[in-house]
Image (cartoon, rainbow, N blue to C red; front, side, top):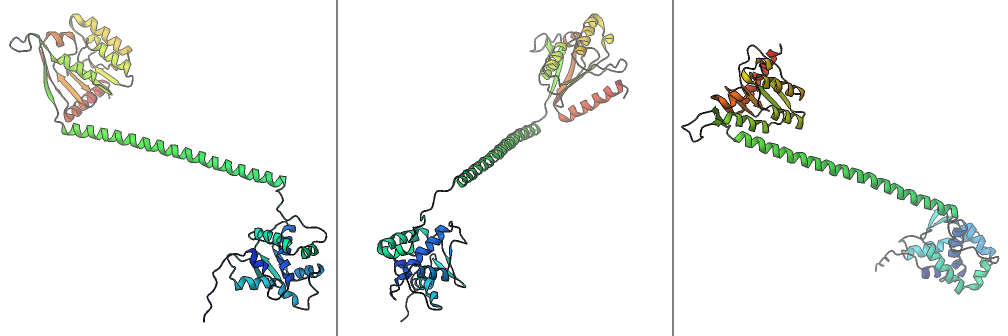
Length: 369
């Protein structure tokens, strides 16, 4: 019949008390106490104080009077008794003792120190006379002493350093997280702006370009307009309100919309306003003095005023790259109020692009480029 192997477990005090029971060699019960003594007096240094030698254990047992001198090779039975109990009961979770060879045994300390301390107390109670023989000159300090001041200070320094390191890491992580949040917000804003611009572009692409016929008619009696139509002037005023980046004006003479252009330049210094004309000396009629005054005021406001005296005859207003008005009227009171003039306004991009190309070419020629 096969014997079932015992499940692995840890050592208990009762296992240690069984030392020597079968053979009646009760001196073996002192071995765990001597192991604990070496550990305590060795400063609890792992790798050193948790190793015992068979020969030293045997000498200690003999010198204490717990046993007669051993016969040759008789000392091998001293720590081996623990090995036998450990193997027979499968006390391997974890092991208490291991044979390293050469009469040296390793003891699993500090893991089993509390077990040996409990056994030490039990041994004192059960075998007081044997205990006195083991320590005739007094016992060692069995309990772990308080850590020295230097060790405590080093431990405090270590804890502080770890705390500061954690704080530093947390600070760096917080900075990185904030940067990531800022980047994410920037991406979201750019995405929204891109979607808005895309929607505007699609809407503009889908929307059919507009075209309007505009005119100035001082006497238009057969119309629902009444007696006067000034849609050229009104159209230019509305166009100037929509200007954002650039205004191009070609007119032979000019004494109207001066205040509007100067106010636009003051509100938006980056807007580029160019008025190409024949200059104040080219103005005609009673309003020549007003044209000269308007020219000087616009010049002081930073409006570009190139002059083409000989060949300029076109009248047009281009706003940004969005809309253009081409008409027969100069931007002066006489032609926008008192004469019959007509023109076309449109936001057709092809027409606007060609008008800009025409104006820039005319401007270049007037400046000798």
